[in-house]
Length: 397
Image 1 (cartoon, rainbow, N blue to C red):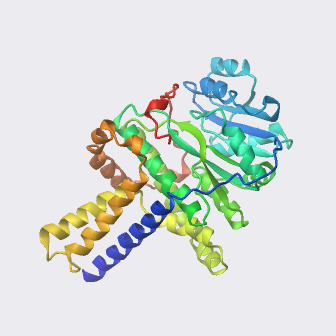
Image 2 (cartoon, helix red, strand yellow):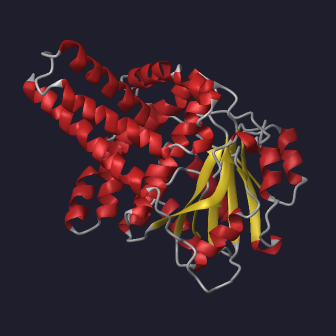
């Protein structure tokens, strides 16, 4: 029992220290735009859309509303299993509509099909989800960072909607991840983690990397690790904002997190050996993203488990051998990382209401740990239905 408790203390202690350091570093600003070049690069904006009839026409039209010169960017929607009338409406817009049909749909297949059709005339590729809406200067900032020498970039996703407690929890989670795993990691000299959308890459290298990817879920992790292995740093563009629809009910939350958890454990097995090897070769970035990120459980689940263990330590006294003071210190430190990572604008009545749904979210995540079999081999689609962006409710700073 002492050994088991010791392992738990080491695990939760490490997670807390790691998160605390990055949370503090997240308050440091790193300028990704140090360049004297004003070159306008050709940008391909790719939007995979699988059964996204409710939002894709609006999102595609919104993607055209950029301050970046129209002759230097192309918006391409990859229409997979869309209704005929949706495809017809897309063709009325000044975009490329790439119609595809697969036995098993994946983002990788859609993106590869789009780049094959578009050709090689682009310098930068930007990946969006079908529900994403960029702020009007997003492409300007991607272009500026590219001119500064960044071949891989992640923009800042913020909440498009805060209409339910689960949407609020999802928005808070995204905001913390932005602060810790993107801004914080860059603040200590590491690469930003990518999210899956609002991310941009040098076109030719991305096309080459993706042609060898066959992932069903978590393709962004494969791309991320490929760039890190090649020695690239992934920049974080905190002021390049893209609005993203948040999960608004428990069922969607369960399906999405199940897919994420499955990918996390699959990629831990995939990259563990190489991660250790490259650490000894000096590639700390690869080790950080391939191993440390994948052994850390979702933050809300970690908080729930740590709370239960700390409560048991205080309640029983003798049940845990290292004393409740140590557990309480770790718990308090971990909770402090939440406090300093959440934007001030999210501290409101909606957040207070959402707190009461945390136990349900923790339980969903905990049960999902035992239901991951096959999840990474099946394309689990998360439908979207939010069109309008309520910017007054976002955590924009």
